[in-house]
Every structure is written in C-alpha cells, then in structure tokens.
Image (cartoon, rainbow, N blue to C red; front, side, top):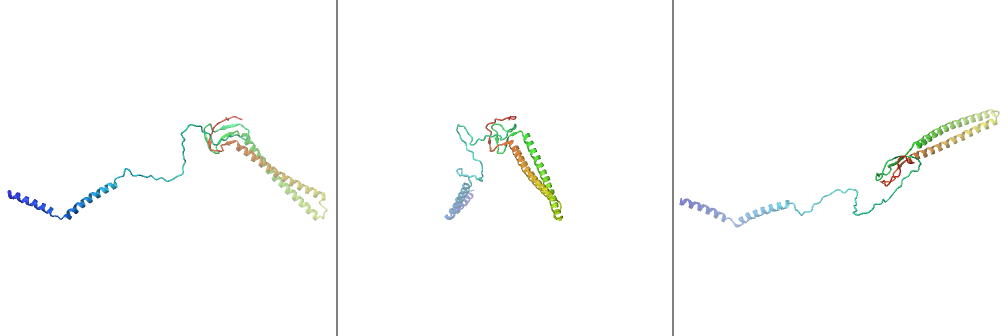
Length: 228
C-alpha cells in the first residue's frame, strides 16, 4: 500500500515537473493568445453595441408644399381685398347659391337672374338674323336676274343696230339693276345689325349669371330670390 502511494506521488511530481519545464516563451505565447482572444471578443462586443449617445439622421425628399404661419395674439383680421358684386342688368333674382362665410372660387356662379326675357331676346335676334340672310339671298337673285336682262337688251340693241329696244327701255333696265344692287347692300347691312343684336342679347344672357372674380369668402349677402 505504501509503495502504491509513493508511485502516485512520483507520477504527480513528473507531471508538475513537465509543466514547469515548459519554456518561458511558450507560456507567454499561451497567455498572449488568451489575452488576444479576450480582447478581440470585448472589441467585437463593444463595436456591435449601439451607442446611446450616437446621433441618428432621417432623410426626406424635398417637396413643395404650403407654409403655415401661426400667430398667437388677439386682434381683428381684415381682408386684403374686398369685391362688391352687382348686376349690370335689371332683372329679378332667381337664385342665390351662397351664404355668408361660404368659401368661393374664381368663376363660381353666386347669383342667377331670371333669364326668360333675355332668352326671348336671343331667340328673336336669331330669327331676325335668319330672315336677313334669306333676304340677302333673294336680293342677290333679283340683282343677277336684272343684270342678265340688261345684258340681253344691250345685245339685242347691238344686233338690231339700235332699233330695239329703245334707249328708254335700256335706261329703265339699267335702273332696275342699280335698284337690285342697292337692295343687296341693304340686306347685308340688315345681317350685320342682326348679328350685333344677337351678340348683345347673348352677352346680356351671360351676365345673368353673376360669378365670383376671385377666390375668397362671402362677407355679406344682401339679396334674396325674388329681389329686383
């Protein structure tokens, strides 16, 4: 038993002596590797750890948009521009499409007048224009006929060496040509008048719809349906 214990002590001593007999640079290398591994792990952990004091940035595409300005104060707002609307025509208000504080856009119809009389004037002007154009065609036909008859009489007078028709008949037919030509000019003038009348009637009809000239807000309303 005593010999067995002595053998175990010798074996342990041999192992210890082997470890102690390792060269110093081997032991230093081992410890250096251990320190390098530990240091590398700490660096990797620190580099991946988020910095609580780091500044972060958020990018956004620049776009055009409205700018809101807020004023914290007591006061009264006055409009930069005020427009008072009225009608160039005399008539009865048929419809009012807006009220106070309503927002309106440029060209929006605000007030409508009764258009029955105006529409009747437009219809009458159109009829007069149609009639004037028909009269012009008739006058032109009469002129052409008078010119043809006059040309035939002149040719007959030439062939008959002045014996027929008489000079009085030639003068009379020439006068008919001039009368027909004057009638054509009158018809053309009638057409111009009818076109002007129609243009005025249509313009007045358009004025029966009173529209907003600007974008804005209705500040006051002084008319109601039925007002003249």
